[in-house]
Length: 341
Ligand code: NDP
Image (cartoon, rainbow, N blue to C red; front, side, top):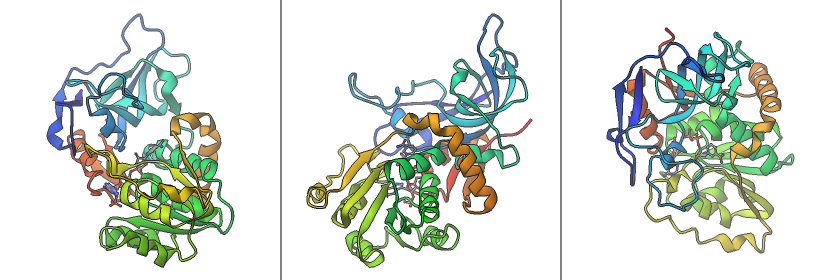
């Protein structure tokens, strides 16, 4: 059983050397005596930015979304797998599932309540790490429930070609909005306009003035800013919000590796413009997963939503793939494919 373990706690930008692939023994049965465990053969591991937070060592008492990873132990995140043994009444060998698993080839899941059965096996299984999994639900809950779009709204999405951003933008188009995205390369900007149907897009790395870029692309201002990055982009967007606008605070990836957060100076703009700034955690929306899965799988089949994935092969590729999220190396949803047999 090959597994990715944390080698040391991280400060600043993570590197591949913070993790190590080690070999442990393979378990092919749930241990005798266990009444509610599921043994999963992992097929796809998802790389998600929130894993970075868990790689730090936080002081006691600090509020964190999930406990720190332990040095020497296997990393944990969402994944897609096949049940090979189960003592839990709701799962049986052969079931395809997605949910919390280890960054390893085989995982004994002791809390199978955190697993979802995969219903749409006619769609690529890997989609359950992205569009039909946690990032998809994040885009859907964040844009539809927190953003509450109206037809004709002007929408801005940052990290727009990524797992969440590409879907937030496409949901905005479905909702009848005008959508602009930002991304970190000309290739990604091209993808936004030609593949995902954004009305306009810009490369934030080559713009001298982000506020000017927003004014150029959205001359009438922003009704909904779906924020994946925080920092300078959030600051520029705040200046450019329309009256009654909404900032959906999904993520702040530009801040995750900084010792001191970048100051956001334009928060005052939310007062005269009566802007609602609202954060959310996808964990609070799991009860709407079934409705979301049906709707999103329908959009995919109708061609209303397209998906771009960045797939690397083999568990040895996982550390580099994870680290790559923080330099924008991924084009689309980053995931790791493991051997089927
Ligand atoms: P992505 O697939 O978008 O990958 C990360 C992308 O972020 C990179 O490709 C890069 O794209 C961009 N990025 C990296 N560093 C910076 C930086 N310093 N400044 C600006 N952009 C940067 O990731 P996800 O779609 O999975 O996640 C997007 C955001 O959503 C993250 O902030 C994540 O934490 C958040 N999130 C929040 C959830 C919630 O419940 N609220 C749940 C899931 C995700 P580029 O080349 O464009 O720079």
